[in-house]
Length: 215
Image 1: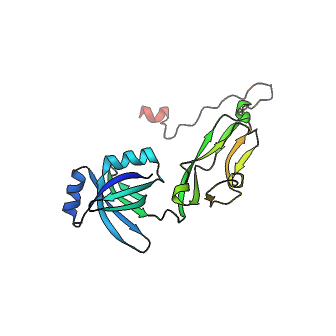
Image 2 (image 1 turned 180 degrees about the vertical axis):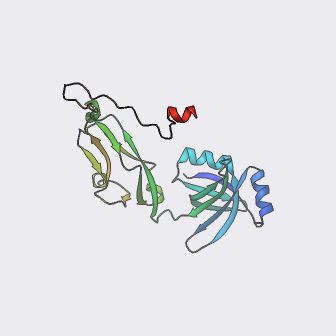
Image 3 (image 1 turned 90 degrees about the vertical axis):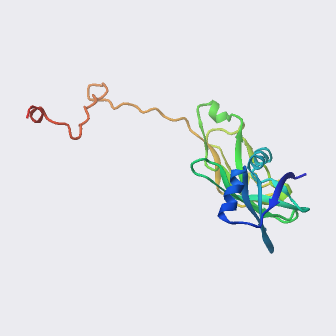
């Protein structure tokens, strides 16, 4: 069941009215969808943040608008105040629960690989993947178990294709995570006598000479 967000439809979209809405702890929002007229609403800012934190960025919410409307919508975009970091505007997108949508889903790496236990370094090159699915089948995240990965092993998009009720849109050859060989420590240069080369004193830019200081 979709999490419910209470919304109030607003007719007055002037700057002064918008300012009052924000002062009351609410955030102006617009709800739109393909072939649908946009609806301007406002929602409680703290309630929205809590629901997104609890349900996930790609969750489907039931927007219950005063007057009896109930709409299935996803959080499409939002703006924040760069100084206060408060929400200033939100875009909701109406969804058909039987129609696929394209979203970004985070990648989560679990476990400690065999390669890491041997001194290797895990490198994650993709933190988000593009996914196509019906709203009900959008994963909260995509988890990769790294426990069996040895040094030199990697996981690509093609390794995640089978048995999923969603489609990953990124190129199949894209590497998501790889286990690199142990990092080699820098070896100091050895001089002719078999000892490390002496460090030379770095030149100081704009350093005054003794003659200049005496002037």
